[in-house]
Image (tube, rainbow, N blue to C red; front, side, top):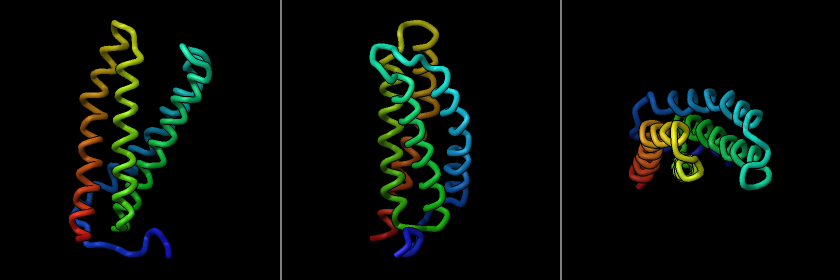
Length: 134
């Protein structure tokens, strides 16, 4: 059985898959940038690999959620929920690991205006998919 089978009557706006696929494409250069510019050691070894790995997981979940929403697959519940969790972890550690000053302000702004809305949207997508499947 293919993950794209078992279509559901998913009551989501048509722009949802487009947003997730678009964001996954935008995250690719960001992930490359993070992986190549972060210091190898911060307070822990492999600091750069840790953040790049989290970003890669978010790219995969963004793309998977977009594709599964496009194909109206019930599996979108899992990917959207996973993405919401990954975004929450990313926002938390971005804010908690920054020192005072401009970098902390940028982390808070990104958490509030980018990551939090995406977390809410991802859980909304999962909720709507679950609700349509009942």
